[in-house]
Image 1 (cartoon, rainbow, N blue to C red):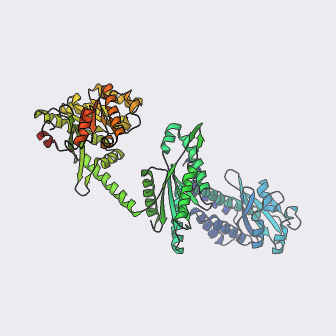
Image 2 (cartoon, rainbow, N blue to C red):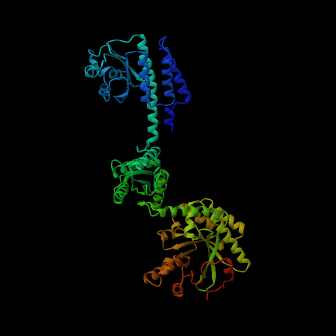
Length: 630
């Protein structure tokens, strides 16, 4: 943005400069001329003010000075590097303009070539005899061009941008008036040329991604809009690949943004290598890229390109002495079948990209109508869940845990339930991840803990003493406010800390110092801790060596296979024995048959939880349930 501000002229500056130009033109005005000169100069200034194309203004300037000097022909050449390019020359012969266009400037390349090379005025009295015109006079003399006076066109910093040339059909040098006109014309052309260069630079900044050199988001929108219009006229089609790097944030967080920039530049180059040479590629933002494939022959052609992108991106790369193997996900949408305008195409390609991410990343997904329905349903769920949590419209049910030795109910696990009037029953496995994603897990957990603890107090009044187990999201272990929240709820409800057991999934149980600190802070409050779904994670043994927990809950996966596979039975027995050796209370989840119960009893499991005794039920049913399992 600062670069654009450096070259951007304010409206006040433009008005001031136009006033200067008006005065300069008026200084060279010939007395007794009619009002046409004033009209011409005013017209040119207006063209500059409203931003007319530079080539149109060049022609207007040439015609104005030709009118002031009958018999004179004028031309402007722009200097691109050291190459002369035709600018404006409405009265010059076409063959001459074509001969000069594209020449390399130098001291012996006509008047304008020499002027741009030296940066000073060059006056050639006779083209026929001047050595600077040796190679070009064959294109000038046959058309009556005999003399040429050239003034370098410079910008406000003195840099040569081109040359203004005045030609006569007879050998001559300029008089004072013509000399002033030459200077004035070059000054006016220089102002237009500098503004044109600035505007082109602005467009380049706006339409080119500075980091990767690819097209920018702004240019992508223009390109896609034009492509849709052209494609409609010719009844063609094309496809849009929307690409996003997987886990790019991890690179920035671990190695810094400089490393991220290095990776983005490398991947932009790889996308160019992975796609046909005519492919249009733009960097949309951050780590997102858009690729347009025209003239798609068939779906296999498109899948080959998408797979090529995945393969090229996946090559390892060394960044700051670290080997990184990047990957990406791609959403694919086709025009016109998936969307008939820019907004629709971007929407469906983004939906497809999201689906690729959800399916595990490092893959491409073609858009289907069902994906939009899925997204719309997810949006409904997210909006409704936020309202439900804020308005406390969810409910709790409780599943008993039975002591295997006594058959007595010793605890219950609180489970959230949500029934929406229009969407129906939505399972916790569906709405809990959504609550985590939309940032509503904290108020949800607050409500669950508060409600569950108050229910324990109510049961105590009825003479029912039970421990309350509540499952806690891993998100809370990066939240500094979690332990204070639990402390507050205990104080507000009057719950005895030892009656509250917080269950954490095995994936949460890491040896990360931050996690260990949270665990210890909860233990310091006197709360019980349990590892839920034990046996399905990868960090069990390492974590058990560091954590001060109270119980293990063996996952239902093992219980389902307990009677069918002797290895599973041995494994469950080992888990129970290990838990006891570490002084843990062991609970088996998902017990549904009497045979499973009897086997677990023989293996000396401490407690069971499952449909054999009870499904999750409401609080009033727990109050009426017999205390013992018969």
